[in-house]
Length: 35
Image (cartoon, rainbow, N blue to C red; front, side, top):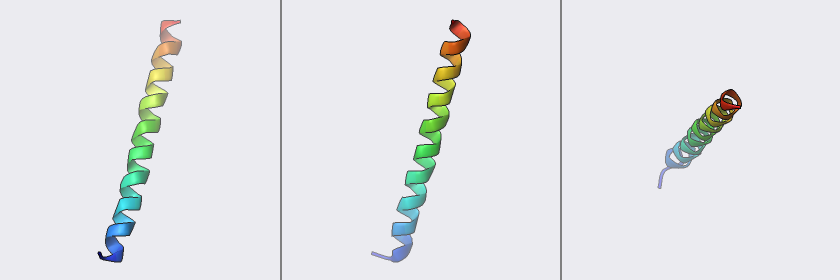
């Protein structure tokens, strides 16, 4: 395994975390708008 693969895995995890945070924020915003 190359060290680059490890860095790529870290980047993928960060991107997934950011996407999850955005989806969570959208869900919270939609709930706030409904109420």
